[in-house]
Length: 236
Image 1: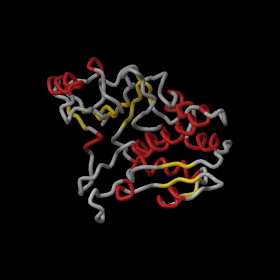
Image 2 (image 1 turned 30 degrees about the vertical axis):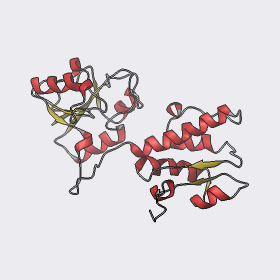
Image 3 (image 1 turned 135 degrees about the vertical axis):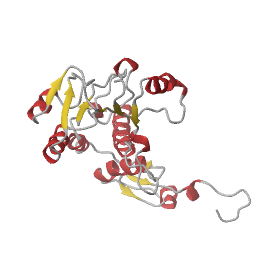
Image 4 (image 1 turned 180 degrees about the horizontal axis):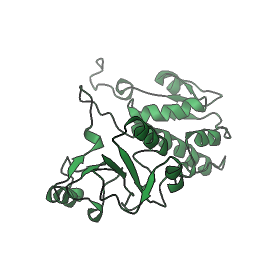
């Protein structure tokens, strides 16, 4: 099997990639029947040289590959006829803005594997970027807070090399006695919580948050029952 990593062609460009150099190296070492080719890219978060150093071959096109792995929607002129494409297509719900993409996939007899619909036996999604949306969102929230109040300057998240650099940036700041509300309990919320915990922001109950003052930064994570009450005064 020839597996190709496609150049992300959507505008604005996306720096993410389906497989890292280390993951590619692991795959070809464990599965002799698989060979991986990497389409050259000047914008990918991992450089072409990093893939070369991992023993992978760089190519101008991945049209010849059996399975083509990407992240975002593939532009119509980059689809490979009668091959298998793997990416987030945003077509299964019949989104109008990607109607032409779905039509072209059908027309070219392409086998589409959409990350969004890779699930376990219970129907739960296995692949999603919610956690990192929370991590980056919370980080950029503090970046904005620092700029607005002229307290500190953080490097934008997309300019950080990795998670460790994000944490090094956060280690430089002092928040003071601020109160933060973290809503939700899903992947995004859990990702944001990681940032708060790294900053040693103490968690308090919704009642403490509403009725007490604190000398250090705190946050609360209210549940639905903490946010709403019945008009008739009965229990939630």
